[in-house]
Image (tube, rainbow, N blue to C red):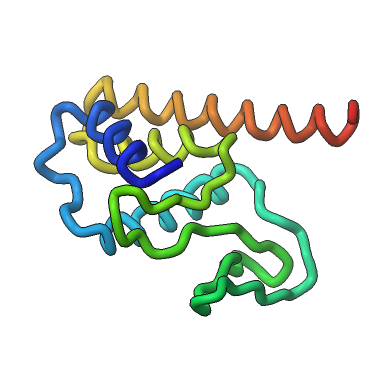
Length: 136
């Protein structure tokens, strides 16, 4: 998914809070990474692996350490609207809903809807990975 697509989806989901959305791409990068960590905290979907360090050609880390044994793939810096955001395609909407949840005003029905939609996206991701592993 490119950054502009993600930004549009978040803007549409947060109709009542658009003025609170970040204006700098560097802020979006931080928030997207935090969103991925939020999703991990909801469900253990990180890679179980021995310690490893994978970097891109520009030296950015591809995986972030979550615990001694778990790593998550995280997107790099966003530089333009066409920057590719490296998120597992099955988790893209979970990230959109998590960001929308963060920017929607407190105690709104819409905020609760974003939370439920995020959970549904994560559950579908977990179920699809389970099916691939055991039916593949």
